[in-house]
Image 1 (cartoon, rainbow, N blue to C red):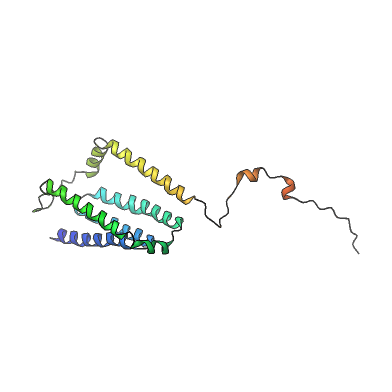
Image 2 (cartoon, rainbow, N blue to C red; image 1 turned 90 degrees about the horizontal axis):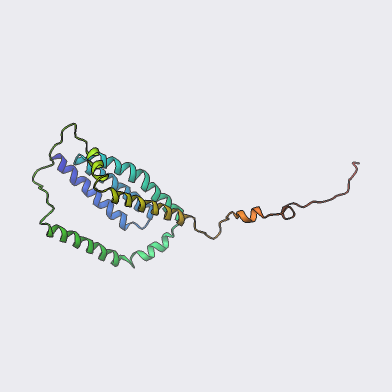
Length: 201
């Protein structure tokens, strides 16, 4: 009973935080709401005794990926006024996309005759020697080894793209020109002035 109550509490917070991600017009607030989503998702993972997934979700996504998101958002110097103007203009497209995703999920659940889970009782308790980390690692590096490598390559491309976006040229900033610095001559930087010697009075 306690686990069910905690699940509904965390699920409610998760849904509200997810709504905050897509409705907030400030990208920094959206990123912080996404952090709340990750933390509450980790709490739900803990309720089903998936400790490794919960720890990875907090350490990797909250500790690394979200910090990267925040740095990219702050470095891109996004015009918030322009975002506020275009929010309502493209809202219909977002609602259509969300409706299409909901219909697809409902269609898959209906075609499979339900989720395939017996919700009348909780999960089976595992013995103390059971390690979900070992089970997860065995599945990832055997059955899903190629999708794992593909996901790693996609993340690498995303990091390179984020760095490329932050290195774009903006007006009012000074950039270092190495070729011009190497090709400089002494006459361009140093001026020799000859003055006649003067006697002290």
